[in-house]
Length: 128
Image 1 (tube, rainbow, N blue to C red):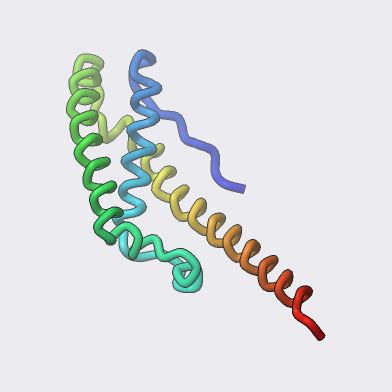
Image 2: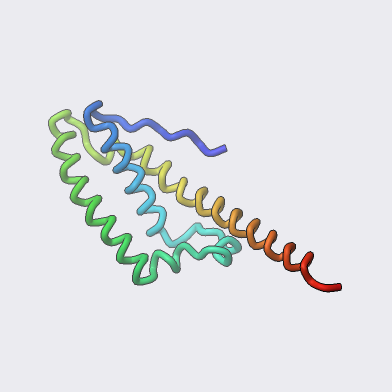
């Protein structure tokens, strides 16, 4: 079972934005981290190649810019409460980074099950 989402600290009024921001930052960091991806699963779905492709890079860059803008706004709100953005998001961001890998492995497993059923279907349809 996957670990539970850690809570995000900070003012109640910013909770939803802080949670979404932490998860987006963690996912982006997970996709940008080159090492640690299972070599066998990369043969099924190579997330690094997808992220490095021109459309993938454009999507990640756009997300990064949006997150930078949101970070500035959240820092202002947290400054009033006497808290730092990095401290508030740290645990949830790390959780989200690892979640990217868990979800990727789950997708690889689903793709392999579909492919297996297709191959078994072809075998059953083949004339003997």
